[in-house]
Image (cartoon, rainbow, N blue to C red; front, side, top):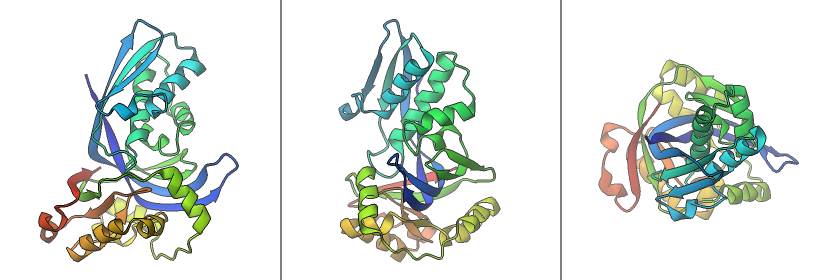
Length: 277
């Protein structure tokens, strides 16, 4: 039976200093959205890991889902084989955390399948070894994410709201985005406040949420990819409360309003309307 592997958006992202490990300290508010891949996980009699997908690019050992399964086998001496099949719907390298979500989904389900009985704290520790976005997906709430992604503070009173996602149809490497950020060291001024954002989420104040959207990657991505800036400006001209690059891009998110549903303005892009929860 396939299990959903949900994507995420970043409503807020501040990038801190680069650590000796190569990771950066971050401060981010992440929220799951309805857009999802579907993952089927089946036991094998042979002691090996097989990853298959509707996207053949994902079938190697570089896949984060493969890596988390291999890490569990190594650390907990699991003498089991597994076949992981990924029906891919979330665009690759889109700023939506698709690969990280896949890894967390496999982690949670192998914990049950292999009877490892790992607690959430242990699962987050394992997830943080795979990637900075993976720990967020171990739990289900919108959350404040800090450190290198391993410090998770759930926002208990999050709520469902419609959003618009527009993806220009190409990928942006997170590794490139961090490297460009370190080289350019952009001076970023913003009125957005993470505490006010969290308060607005808890109060279900949509306008105040929109006022506090922020992403340190945005000037980097919009400078290199002019079309991303074009998408954002088109959304704002068509009555979006606010628009923002998610993660390292290039997907742009916006809160939708009734008058904004003029899809002819965005027909050349991949426009998806979703809920976040």
